[in-house]
Length: 524
Image (cartoon, rainbow, N blue to C red; front, side, top):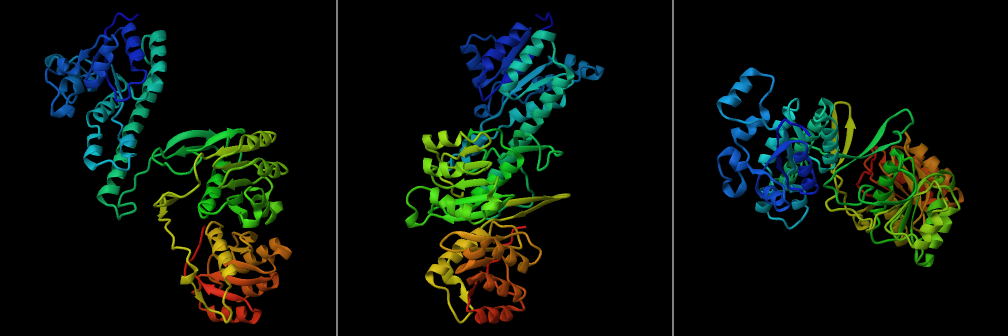
């Protein structure tokens, strides 16, 4: 045990583990000072400590809003022990040094997660003294240890017991964590207050983002790259973060990226059982369950798979309804990386566990979008691009029929389905569909006619009698001619080309119905 009496200030909102920490600090020679609820909690558990007001000579005021912001506290934390002038100031003003600060903050984020929270209640959860103490201790980490995370209590005590002090490396690690905490705390407050003070503004003049590391991935997109998954602690919607990995090895960087793409498409069909298969962040096949398919998702999966069996190999399966045994058996006949679904039956789990390299992800709730949808960010050199993700309603009555022939009700239904999928395919793209099932997808081409050619090749005979959605207008008639050869009978696209009439004439020549949606669906 150390013979030098050192002082630790403890003031925590989260009381987890703090009694054991306090006992351990006393055992290695620390004097403890505390305030408010923390003082009460420690003394009730038999821990000897002094009140902050005994150190400051000033009582807590304003209902506890002011208690630790005092020169006797802040001076004891910020004093640089190696500077003679600082030591003289401490002596002249009777300030004792504080060698450790153990503080965590009012639970602002937990408080505002209640949608019914009143502004006045949220304001009272904005910690003032806590961040000041943390920043002061972190700034003076050469002399003071700052502990903000209960998971570090054991590490700190062990090092003190073994060495009687904390190394500079440990104090630097703790200081960095402390500054990250106060930074993220301010971001959470600012972002929430913006939703209250500027509800019509999607991001404001100054953008602040906060993410916490969830896991390291084995590598990034390629083995020579490092990768990690960072999460938004405030996000409560469908995501890998809020799901359970119930079987399989650790998710890779690409797995997580593709799971996100799968759930994006499933959210387009909240009221219809849907299956999507993702490969390299593009859908290789999507289908919606028909009445004749029965209650199982097995047939819906098969129809999504049959769109492009070659590309589906090693893909990501997304289901927006329960995965049952029949569906699991169909999935198990092929190689896939991941299956994500709201729930799995016990029989399905047992069946899929036979696939050693398959991961099972359970969301535990319906795969539906949050309202309003999150903005999307693209990181570029030197900055970010940001855009809203609201879209017009998929109402075909607002579409303009521009050909002699109008789409039938069944074709319109397929065109809406295809357009919802098109929105999630990399541009330039077209999607061919029939009976609520994609039959051919042409993605990521520099010319639209090449996308039409690829989709037609994928569709083969299944393209006969299909409809097509294009993410943007056709600049020339060649895309229409290629699609007509594949058997396309109805097309939806935004229109707006200087050659629209040429494209319309081509559709009429081939007996194809065509509508202008006036909504471009680019995804770069």
